Picture 1: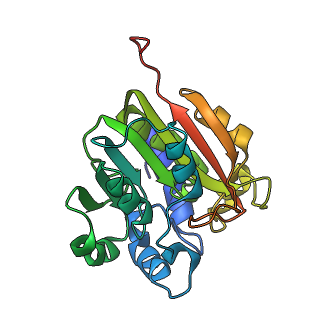
Picture 2: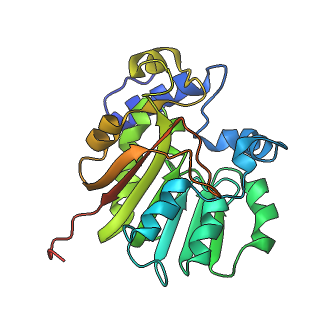
Length: 241
């Protein structure tokens, strides 16, 4: 028996608790088949080809910065709908997801400026930064509470100074989920956790908030379920630019 005496050991033990639950760890490479199956289920909302409503809105308002020629990291890209949208705006996109089999199917139809990579964002080597925009639509809310620390340590440094980090998550104002304590004790992530606008402001407090709000379900030609929150942040630029 090995006694716990480092933070990494503690995180590993909590990983085992989550992995042993009925749903398993949906942010781990072992969940690749689950995500491939879900993202290819006919009629499932996540098979939509439409970009997220906040992306379209923020771009129209100039809040994402210049996307033409920008480097973008799409975290948990799924079926690639936002990846494709970024590429259509002129960005070079590194898109990552657990569902390697799905990415293999998507790759031939993606623009030449897109690179799709199957990986575990918490444990595998990530594409080299810095990026002008790092975008997460639906990855963060599937990460067990104890691994948010790992996510913040690995993902946020990839945003260039003055660049943007943007995220879409389940909204605590419109959905019920258990407490972080319940998840850590049982290992059950309940199909995803929810975050209020204030939660996002606090968790990503190392960044400067640009806009935090509910997704607008009334915008046509976008992916806009009414149970999502969105946050846009700017990385601190030491030069003041």
